[in-house]
Amino acid sequence: EEEPIIIRGTDTDEIDGSIWEDLETGAPPQWMVLKELLGVNIFTYILAALIAFFLGMWLGQMLGMSGVGSFEKVSDAFPDTVDVSSPEFRL
Image (cartoon, rainbow, N blue to C red; front, side):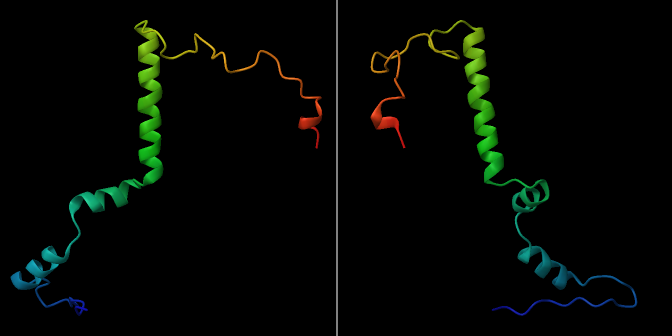
């Protein structure tokens, strides 16, 4: 494990060039810093995907594409009515 660099103030308060290079080489990438500052995490990616999905559905419906944005057909596999008073649904 590398020892941390300790910077102490000097009379001129200037950082030596070699110390500055050490700081720059050990710095995290700018993209990582930006993600931390903005709070970008998995929730943000999921939210962006959902927004893109629903925006696509809405645009498809506005353009009149069939089968996009609303249900036009119901599968024959679904029953028309369900009797929930039958013994199989009782607790």
